[in-house]
Amino acid sequence: MRNFVINNLMIFVKNNNTYNDVKLAEIKYGLEAIYLLFSKSIIIFSLAIILGIFKEFLIFAVFYNIIRMPSFGLHATKSWICLVSSSLIFILAPYLCIYINIDIFLKSFLGIVNIILIYKNAPADTHKKPIINSKRRLCYKYISVLLAITFSFTAVITNNSLISNTLLLSLVVQNFMISPYIYRLFHLPYNNYLTYVGNNNLGLN
Image (cartoon, rainbow, N blue to C red; front, side, top):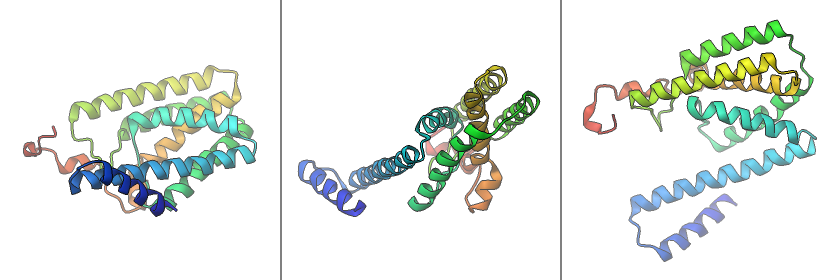
């Protein structure tokens, strides 16, 4: 199905434009990414609706993506791995947020640990998209830490257990995704920007 959709879209692009092979390859890569995101979202949305946790899923998805945007993190190397891992995260995590009960002392402890780990590991780039610019990395780190502090503080003071649990669990999941150990587990390079440090000829710093 994916090949059918992508190939027909590429035929349309070729027939209506005069792009070179490099540009066509970029367009095809973008179309594949959009298709995978769209199909994955339909599956996960459907599961959340069927299981009756759509509201909890949406809350978790919003908080998780807010902290993930500046701190980045691991990306699956294959589409089926991405689908399975995303389904586990976005379905299991909302379930936990509904049923777990965390006292204020444990919330405070988790908040502090999450902030420290975010400061230590964020932003975590990938070999396909290394964050080469040092000022940009520092900016991403500060934003990530500020968000982690905000999430943790809100989780401790709010009386809404769902929001509190979701804020903390989104930090826990994201710290897992930016940990050097998870990169090592999947045999992926970590701190990819180091490969380019000092190489001014790339014109990317």
